Length: 356
Ligand code: HEM
Image (tube, rainbow, N blue to C red; front, top):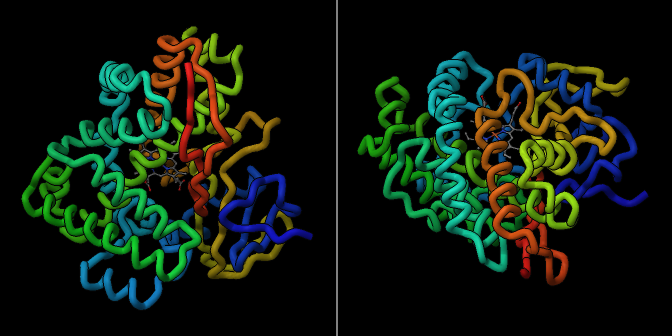
């Protein structure tokens, strides 16, 4: 039997609903995954942001020097402080605030038409710009933010060598230090809100580190996958300007090819999933990408930690698809198959090259 690789596996390669891969327990049955996410007491979120490849001592020393830390705040927080922090962050992404961003998203897409690589020229920076505006953070150098956030994704979720960890570790540390500095300077609405709520500098930096990555890298990935898939189907591309078509296509992409392909939990005690006994302290890798035939999906998780940006990500993707398809009906894919970003929890094409 071919070896299943943690960083590239697909549902089709799995032979059992609970399968050990590289020392982790991959859980792929929809009902199991949902039950796990619904019970944060038995299935702790503590490992959500733990480095998949253990951090080597030299990189660890660099992180200590940079005073890097990721205390439990949102995704990795099973404690009672989660609810308050979640409420604070949710106030920036209310349905009304998200809906009000639509004209701005459309304008940003329109400014980015005409390029030859829809990832580099459109999907790359748009979600980051929208996120900074929603969080009230001004004067953020977007290329630097993207370097920090893509480097951080690879550092924490990638199959990285020691050498690669050392290449990436400064981006991880610099990003964190910048967040601490902005907190102390109360530079931006988000940092003011955190300071006013009495959140410490360390917790604020940990929370923002995750939020500023999750809030835009995942959407860059969704836009990339959705644009590529839409361009593979001429009939769909022609229908995307019609009301509701982009929205239902986005749901289809989330169901079958979501960018956040897995998410992790830790068992607090021995459990049985699909008849398989899993010990206490086991790291579960939950498959969030669904089956072609199953209309349900868990792309944004479920329960207490349900994604706070689901509405924003859906809106950005639908508006982007509709706007590009309306302005560029003859756009088509060109060139060889793209390289893919392949991390434990994140998958997307790195380029979508087009001609018109
Ligand atoms: C396609 C885009 C996105 C996908 C697929 C996605 C997916 C996810 C998933 C799977 C989780 C874990 C849920 C769980 O444990 O049950 C999560 C949590 C989270 N996401 Fe997203 N996300 C996306 C975009 C965003 C955006 C745009 C934001 C910005 C607001 C965001 C903010 C968060 C936050 C703050 C959490 C942690 C919530 C908590 O622990 O209470 N995400 N997301």
